[in-house]
Length: 300
Image (tube, rainbow, N blue to C red):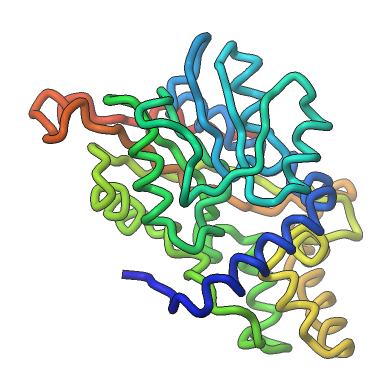
């Protein structure tokens, strides 16, 4: 069980909300191409089609919502950072976005055919509560599909920054206590959490992605300017140390440089499951296990 003392909840949530409020446009600039690479697999896992009622949780700039809407889905995107919602509305003026809390969804029971989240679940303080809410608002048989970053040894773009901080600086800086960032990068843990929340037949796979960054910018600059937790760790380093970290990341990224662009692996972990058709999962439900290996795509 991964829990955080209640007295620290408000400080962490305030830290994250302010952070994403401040970097909304930088996140869009640095992460749009990368995070959209998982959308084909995510939309297929959710079985999004014309008429699908989809809730996009932690929607950020609205990439999942807008793509699903173009397929004919009826979508609502929510995010706890008003700046993200404002940007999503600006980028996708015909889609519907609201400020909302994943832990207390403002929708009736059994409102949606599908609940999706693209790279947001590892930012939630109480993911179990958010899973319970997702289960509540899903119709019987409805699907949930979520992406997070793979472990840093596979998500090389993130791993090289963390390795450089570990080598030249200090990862243990004074930040609000937070849930483990890579908890759901563990396929077994992701599946276990979904089962514990009441979902049936979870399946977890990896989706290949590549971060394309034009030199001289490396993953160091993308995480510093477009992220929150790792960005704050970087900002807490002494200036001379930060310079060494920047140089170290440039050296680690050099083998991935081609024609002026760093092409660094940053795969996603994609999990999908169903809400049981009834309170108890029948054998027929198990036979309808959501298999997503066939929809895992690599967008290079």
